[in-house]
Structure formats: C-alpha cells, structure tokens
Amino acid sequence: MRRTTISGRVSSPTPAAESNIAPTAPAEKPTQSRKRKPRVPLVLIDPAPLTRQSIAAMFARALPEYMIMSAANIDELLRTGSQAFCPALVVINTKSAPVSAPWVQATLDNAKQHLLEAPVVLLSDRDDVEDVMNALSNGVRGYVNPSVEPEVVFAALKLVHAGGTFIPAQAIRTAAAKVHNSSGCTRQQVMTALDLTPRELSVVELLREGAPNKLIAAGLQMQESTVKVHVRNIMKKLHVSNRTHAASVANRLLSQPSPTVAADSPPLLPSNGAAGLLTAHAEAPG
Image 1: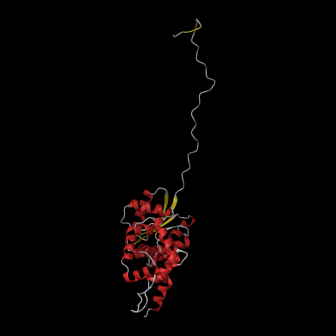
Image 2: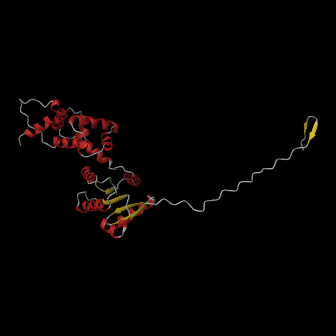
Image 3: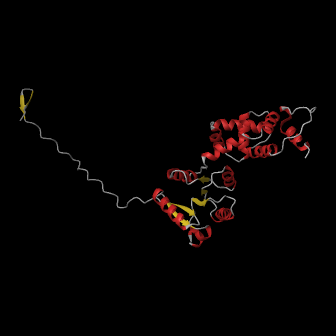
C-alpha cells in the first residue's frame, strides 16, 4: 500500500468518499408501443379478375403503406361499402382501350362523381401521344405503360399521390417531334407575324396541348426556368394575360390553313401582331 508524506508526517490513504447519489435504475420501457401509421387507401379498377387480383397483390407487396381496394368498376366498389373511405389514389387498368372508349369514359365520370378528391392514374398499353393528351384533358394525373419496370410504376403512383403528374417520356418526345414537323409555311408566317423565335414557337405548340412548364421543359430539353421566360415573352407578344388565353390564340392561328396572299400584297410584319395574322386568315378565300 502506497503511503504519502505531508509535512514530514505519514498519513494513511483516505478511503474513497461514498457517493450520496443512488445508482440510476435502467429506464423503464414504455408500456404502450408506438401506434402504427394508418395505411393510405388506394383503389384499383380493373374489369378482368385475373389481372385485377395479380396487380392488387403486387401493389400490396411493394406498397405496404397503402391499403389496396380493388373492384371491376366504381359501382362495384361502392356496393362493397368502400365509399366510406376517401381514397388517396385511383388506378384504372384500361389495357389497350383508348381514353375515348365508352367504359373508360364512364369509369372516369364515376370517379369524378363519387371519388372527388382522388387523383387518377391510368395503366394503358397504348403509347400514342393523342391518347395521353386526351387523358390529361380528362383530368387524369398519371399515364403509365405496364411495359416499364415495376419500380417505375410504383414511383409514378407515389409521384401522383404527392401532387405530381406522370406521362411517358416517349409521349413528350413524340409531341416535340410533331411540333418540329409542322407545316413550315404556317410556322414561318406565325413566327414572322408575332416576332416569335423558333424556340418560342415550339413552346407555343406544347402550350396548345395543355402541357405544364415541367413537361414542356422535359420535352424540349431545357430548364423549367427557361420555359417560364419563354412563356412570359409569348404572352407579351400575343398581348394576353395568361397561358390559357395564349393557347387559345395559338390554336386559332395554327389551326387555320395557310392564307393565300396576292403577289402585290404587303408582307405580314412583326408589328402587325396577332391581329394582323388573324385578319389575313379571316380574309383568305375558301
């Protein structure tokens, strides 16, 4: 045992001071476990029992946060008493039927009437841009081709549920190609009369389809902020106050046949604006 010398005196080691603090007892586990977050209702409409059950089972495995409810149609869903739920998402498997098909239109109408707040996603085998645009004009928020990877389908559903819109990339590329393949004469006359750049005219064409800025940016491979600048410039040149009015004016301009202009007629100048070009179309024979 070690001794210490203090001022010539030997002192014995001081015993350790006893602690007045009682040892802390281990924290008790809470008696109640955390409540599980309620699952979000998702409705699947598919007239075919085999694909309906298969897709519902796949959704249940891959999307555990959703409560999957499936039915052949909206009426059957309502008969089961599921109207008590407010679904966060409605998925309709249209297979190869176009949006204009009577049963698809009836299903969309019933969804709007009975499931008012639920965004709609279509699972469609079709990939033509006309059907995609028809779907968007009917209020559909997602258009998914089942040929994509399942992870893409799941991501699209979550995107729409979060407030976004999903359409196939191929449809955007087709729309952009359609813009650039439009009648050169009509496009050139519109560009000249309205003092539009080729890029602005491409944006105008997609505005006519009702595409939002995000989809225009993706289709034309530009930044969304750049699209916003183009839209502002277009509205200024068309003398309109919003994009809906701009699309309406563009439809009137670009849906008309090319006007017949006499050899001695003055050319359409940028200063004429939209009014000058509309007058030219109105006075064209036939």
